[in-house]
Image (cartoon, rainbow, N blue to C red; front, top):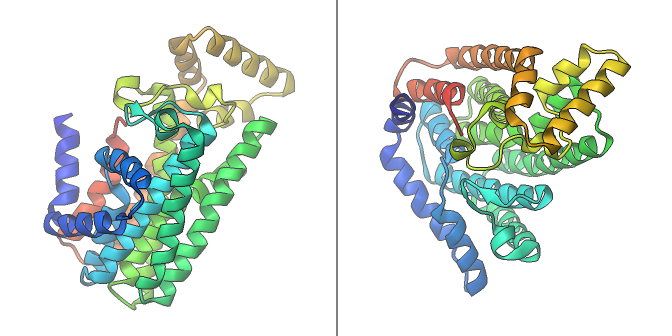
Length: 328
């Protein structure tokens, strides 16, 4: 735990003052005269999470030039969109917990949760015009489309119970990596017109976002529920194929595959989580996913080579290390 705090401290050290300014912008952007919206949003904001994406936006602007008013606006919109996607995720997944607390759809029921998620999304989109930058607007609008497409692909794969590795990476790049890469490239766009630097930050964010989802896949299998903040083995119960399972299934013929899936379902019904975890580890699914994360981490760090050494570069490197080591 102390190691994780040290990594996070390194990531945040170069933007401590700027992050406080972001929080002011973010809270102001949520203000409304509708009491129910305010009540639900206060509940959401109170459980802040890591605010990983706005921090990346600030750091990306810092490494490319200067953090400015547009950076604060963009980071606020990105966090608003992120919160909206979490609310919608919990509705789709019928999840009762988020970060160890009852989800909005459990406290206020799904109808209110849907409306609040929609409000946050539409509020973010309406405030995009405040960022007087056409390139940033194009990124945000494209990201909104990618997020929806990724969610639909996941629902489709759960229904068909079939997805190969290529399709899986396409899905998680839309579902998870798109908002993280939007955070990094928009941060860059608000600080520089240098296309090389903007492209480098997009590639960095896309790799970081992809391995962020891969880490979530691993934590769903190997994580402790009290640390993860939601039930583990959740993806398996919802028939969602993730990379550790896709790798194992790809090595089997049809009859072996059916037997493997049947065994997993049986163990899942019996709530034998340790047996499932042991099976997936033994068959190489965890190691394969860990190797992919390591490969992507190396590529993300290489994308930072175009920038001079300094506090922002150190902080972005810490973001990669944080994902490698996080427990939730």
